[in-house]
Length: 405
Ligand SMILES: Nc1ncnc2c1ncn2[C@@H]1O[C@H](COP(=O)(O)OP(=O)(O)OP(=O)(O)O)[C@@H](O)[C@H]1O
Ligand SMILES: CC(=O)N[C@H]1[C@@H]2OC[C@@H](O2)[C@@H](O)[C@@H]1O[C@H](C)C(=O)O
Image (cartoon, rainbow, N blue to C red; front, top):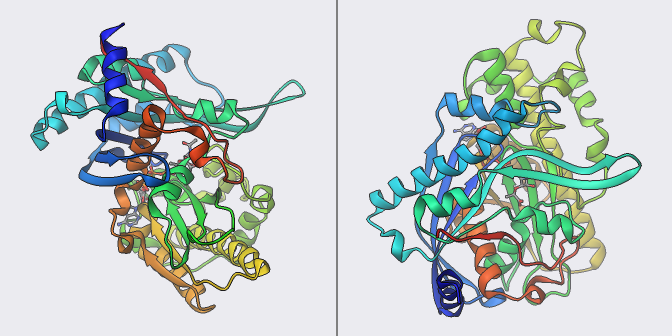
């Protein structure tokens, strides 16, 4: 038997596995590394977050990725180079981080790498045929060879092959780790794109489901970078000083994607500056007051999120289920006071509790990277039926396995 297959067999039989989950999100802010001790599998999974860090990307790296990111036309040589380079670059970050944590690569059972999404194409067309697609780069073989650790990567393709859109995958981790006995939960993540998981209580017959909502921080970040020359509107300083342009907000809210039924997925391919620019005459956006545009984009994120949660609440009330429901927020949007208070004020006024995800007892910033550790754990030690009953989510073990030797 190949010694690496033997090693993987041994890892699959262990009672607990040390798995390094990696996430590089649509905001391009950095690489999240979550070192997780994972026991069991399926609904008996127990995950302990041992270490977590985000390694910020340099502006020059971000610019290299932006040349590919959500673009209709790209340079193939650059694309091919970046697939290999990001793999090697992530391997270098992992090696340096493990050293910093004083953890030997020999003690890490698996790496679970999301890679960098460069294009998300749900409901794409080839001629008359619908072909869903999504693409994450930063090849797993480079990570495995660069670190000496067995690496599982490219998780989204199997989901598409099984009939999904390749996202959101967070539902698998949410379901296995964060289901409560005494309440229903909505786990809302506000990253570049906002998404949610409805998690019924463990004693309920209701189904779990998950969907993207629309813009999180992506349009605000792009606007700040292009027009204000800052990476983000830190603490909403600019947006707080502006006024909402209601006519613009109404136009933004009319985007057809927002009226589509859940579950659905999207990305910065749709929610970007071109969408905003299409609502102005030539050079009109340049003359706008930056604070007002940011206040409007911030309200856009809040209103679309509140609309999605109201939909969940209506569905719950139609079911007749009386258990309380709490909304837990994670992702970078949690750190934006205008977004957080906007959502909290709307929902508190109708009696719904809104809390930071950290009140569940888990670091909100580590949630997505830890999710990929859970997915890798399922791939080596789980069974596809364990998570098979969820609406809109194919029951699959995901990811491709790369051996270092
Ligand atoms: N203090 C802050 N004030 C305002 N915004 C903030 C703050 N901290 C983070 N953010 C926002 O959060 C973003 C990063 O969010 P996050 O890391 O969740 O995104 P991501 O994981 O890349 O996205 P996705 O989940 O869509 O792939 C930043 O780009 C910024 O817009
Ligand atoms: C294609 C892609 O990378 N999608 C991301 C993105 O970021 C948020 C949202 O859009 C979500 O659909 C997904 O990530 C999370 C981790 C997911 O799959 O659940």
